[in-house]
Amino acid sequence: MSHSIMLGNRLRSARTRKGLSLHQVELQTNGVFKASIVGAYERGERSISVRRLSMLVDLYGTTVARIIAPVSNTKTNADSGEGVRIHLPSVSNLPNRQRIVVQRFIDHIKQRRGDPASEVLTLRGEDLLTIACVLGVSEDVLSHTIQHGSVTS
Image (spheres, helix red, strand yellow):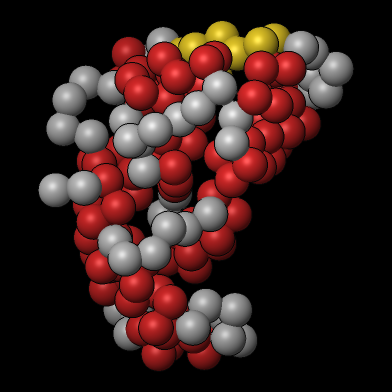
């Protein structure tokens, strides 16, 4: 089963635990999340950005980590507390879509850690897991290839 489908199943589970229909999600978000789009996320037919995933899990009363943690069926870097050190200028070598996602996430992490000027950042296990899930790749693939200019599934 693909990461997108597993993520979608977890989103559907969180939504139904909250007692929300797809239509109710659309209403409660004032149309920010159309029922058809949420359904596509849940079926794994459409990718979801980190920002939108965060917004949905907030509505569902859970966390990104809870939603994506079960996606991997092997021990993850998030489980072990390990991370990957990234030389930040190398992020500019990623293809456009991947670069935008990774850069936005890194900027958020740097701001939260209060270290905006650093050129090296250690992505913690959960950080790495979140980015990998959004890009639809494994943590191993992400940690290995982010330094080499592409992230492929």
